[in-house]
Length: 191
Image (spheres, rainbow, N blue to C red):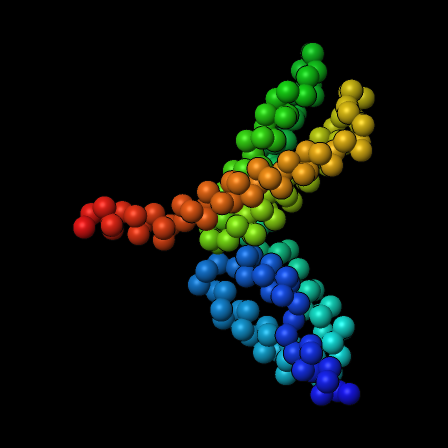
């Protein structure tokens, strides 16, 4: 039974491995992912079984998200949004238009920046969505504290869906214009 568990679960979940690779710098992807899979197969899976080993692997992936540069990227863009939000909600006449404009600019830029850095669209989309979610938390808290008019909370799913779309578009451009791709284009033009 134990051999059967190892053969069907000798690899961690594919989606978790894809997320891990999207969070890492290109130079570190193979080394870190390989070391993690090796530990998964040799130590964790035999000791814990398939389900608990999968949970362990997902927790390891999350630790890279928490400690990684993704949080720095998100916090930089969130800081910019907080500045815009601070001016907007304290204006004599409140209108959410500047916040919406900031959202439509910041989300694809966050996706672009992360995909440009890592070369992965999935990572860029994830960072863009996390940035959008953080912006909506800030917006909601500010609006609630200051008793400003806001749309029903159920409608916040629509902008988050839009964030996935525009964040992925930004990430696609970011991946297309990675440093390596730009250098390849320049070298082709110079020859």
